[in-house]
Image (cartoon, rainbow, N blue to C red; front, side):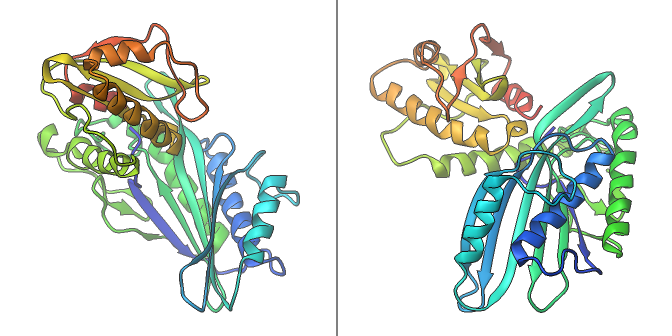
Length: 342
């Protein structure tokens, strides 16, 4: 399953100062790309990353520049960067007023993992952020958003075969980053989901699955709040929760499923569950669909009438489209929320 916040993180205080002579933010990007290539060497990362750039300056300590761009091409440290990234770096460096405090480059990487004979892919399995300080060592942090390395999945069920297939790759990648930075990792604090160690994650205790179900205890409330906070104020919508079965359809952009629209007339309820594996695009689409649901409620449509009506809408660059033939019934909203984590 894929979470919207990290399952665990590791930080290295880099010994060498890589790419000396280049502007700080570019150095951070190049280090993050080099670390991404180490993850790719273990088969954990596959595809172009998304870069988030930030510069903080001495005068106020706040972000002077923030931008997201898509990095084309491979991850290896290469002399030529994608043109749009070069432009973003130039604009970021030019925006600095006052003394530089720290430049932060964060790259989010798609990746793969295996479950039995099936291989899965998500748009954000790892992210790497590099903080380049003016008067201190650089910090390199690797975050993972997948549960494939854990003894139990996020619903609390043991998964020994999944862990055996995937955890060695994570262990090898962490060791490779340690060799690259010439220091040992500092595992981050325990998260809602797991406790990181220098080589991966601690084993979880054998308890009843419902006691380890961090997906419904933590992930669902967090991402629901995150999504609702982005929806502009407006008229009252349908109920957001139900105990009854829900009818749902998949929403996609191209071939990528962004999330699931659902409706339950019995409870006058409807909503949207983002598919975390699709990254931030899933949340951006959700803002549009929740606004449309609210408008359908204002027009007097039942939740399932609204759901059927959406199937005729043309594909939008942000919201995507309803996938023809995807309508199905989930036994409960919780079952659909579990599906959205795949």
